[in-house]
Image 1 (cartoon, rainbow, N blue to C red):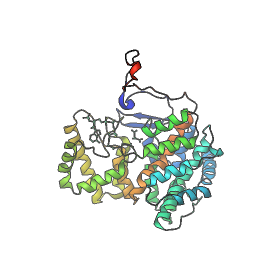
Image 2: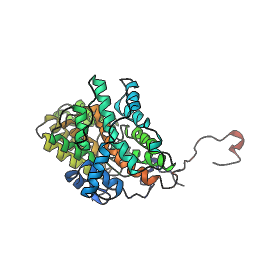
Image 3: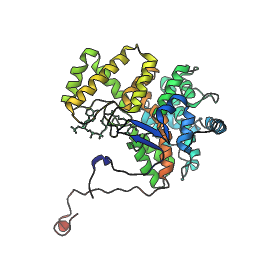
Image 4: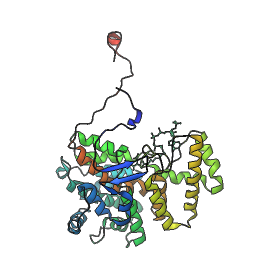
Length: 370
Ligand SMILES: CC(=O)SCCNC(=O)CCNC(=O)[C@H](O)C(C)(C)COP(=O)(O)OP(=O)(O)OC[C@H]1O[C@@H](n2cnc3c(N)ncnc32)[C@H](O)[C@@H]1OP(=O)(O)O
Ligand SMILES: O=C([O-])CC(=O)C(=O)O
């Protein structure tokens, strides 16, 4: 048996949920281009596709929207859990704890689309509730006449959201809804393969997404851009970072050996939203310089812009605070995770191997080899 660090290119599952074409920079959700879906469809339509394998008919969409919008409210005990978490706890930890506390018979094994939808609908409410509590403002009740995306903005801001912001956030949410066998999805599938429940799988996935090498990157992108400060300091700053063996946040990807297609789509979106924003101008300049210098310092590694670089730009353009960046990623990735959880819950227990490189007890050392 050979050891492959990071399981790179090791096939761990067969899936019908999505196809990440790393060589050509393309992303497919159940037979549909993710970019096309992000331009002409709603959050609910794409969630329906990922969960059911086909886009909904008008009647299916109407029924789903009506049922799902009734699932947004938080049980009292979840509100109590949220109120008990210390103020300084980060929003991703809060989200992980609140989702974990949803545990009940309603979410028992086996995972179902109904369970997936019921939990997905609650994530924005958890975030918005906590957001208001931290600010000392009153949490805003959801509005069943609004779609999932518009309602998320409404619950955060307490005013009718602008259609431009709703459309931009909807495109962002759809582009980040699903992405093959990334670390958090793999974590979710491992837990699901033990026949554990959907709440446990999603809790593990949120924990994995939080890391700065995964969904935690956008706020580090903001720090990097703040550190660079101006266009004329870009090259020196990046050289310094790469010479001290640092990583440029928002660049590089395990699967994409070209620009991440979602980064292309989000860059277009950010430019449409705020082309004249000096911050965005700096980001575009940093991208150009970073790609050139990554090739100089890491020749042949094919390090390009990943989704997180322009995710930060879009979040910024729709005036989201940094504490909401990764939680908002989780709001949408819950759909992809749960589609995988439903798939993996019927599969074989995931149980890889490890090569033991430690010591043997003295008595066994000569007698047995590991
Ligand atoms: C939604 C998402 O999760 S997208 C990813 C968000 N994360 C980031 O943007 C963090 C920055 N990027 C990275 O750390 C990496 O590119 C990852 C984690 C995304 C992928 O990591 P891996 O596939 O494990 O690549 P690995 O860490 O083996 O890097 C391969 C080589 O490229 C270099 N490299 C990879 N990414 C970067 C980067 N962003 N900056 C500088 N060098 C990099 C590594 O130093 C390594 O070089 P070496 O072979 O000379 O040691
Ligand atoms: O696939 C990955 O490595 C991480 C990522 O881009 C995602 O989950 O969207």
